[in-house]
Length: 299
Image (cartoon, rainbow, N blue to C red; front, side, top):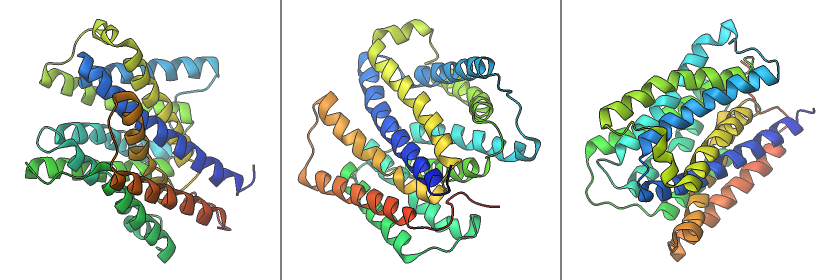
């Protein structure tokens, strides 16, 4: 496979993952309205992911051993993944979902600003411009609410963004460990956190609760499982900065899916924001296709 094809495939995986995550959020809302609580879904999707990776390793004759030199990076990836969910879910207990989403989706900006220090690559004016446009678009799509703010919610949402940026950088550097093993170990680290949150909130119920809204639960868990696999495949091929911009399309997909699934309406500002995000993503794909060097960090 050529160097050009590798980054392009990585961008496709990133866009596919972002789209699935966007659908995942909407169907999680549908499941919640039906009475299926979030912590239960998180626990059972983690258990499903662990079962699937063990089964895939057996059928594909892959080992689940992590490369020794990547143990620390893999541990950081797992901890960051756990904190993404923990902080993001907890933040909406203190601030509106829209405000939490806007703060959380500042992570592509965090990634781009940190890239010169982490990946040792210069921050180009074109990349900085693309990320600013995408951030403005996300703000317009989500439509922030400035009432009822609480510093705890703001800190948790920002923490989720930092954890996501850390997740992207760690995943982009964990390239020697087999993808199946990578997914397995990450979720083995996430599982205790998911169980703890479920126990503390008193929402750790039997699998029978998933039958309340089977299709919504299937879409929620399926979107996460495939989306996470695509995310790992993307970050094995492209840089965290390139992937971060691609993931700005996630709230756009969520907004469109909310219209079709939940019957919500989009304002002209939200539509304009979606156009800005799409413009930023397309521009990023074009700029990366012009690069002569691979997007995967080399150190």
